[in-house]
Image (cartoon, rainbow, N blue to C red; front, side):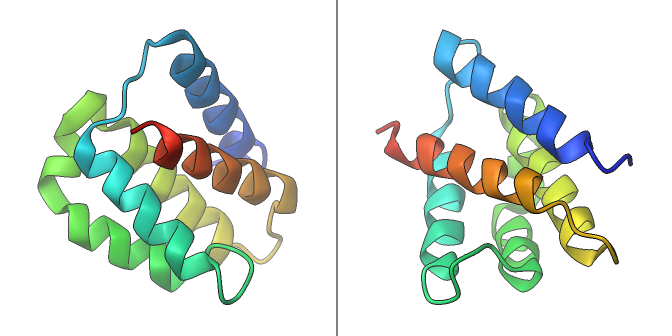
Length: 104
């Protein structure tokens, strides 16, 4: 994965969210909400919280909406585990999760 992959994935998903090409399911919104809640005390998403969210969503998360959110979460995890993190990509991913969470 390239250092810009997370930013590119986030931009693609944000565009799809804005145009209605991606309509998050209840499960996806619930996962986004869990991540945002976990991020509140520390100010950003943590690798542990993302792994926990992936575990919570498990197999259904990979099937809904072509697994879009699960792929994003995997890329977030990879970025968080990298020696050189992509702060802009992580911030944009967190902003996208906020947008998903607001789609109720």
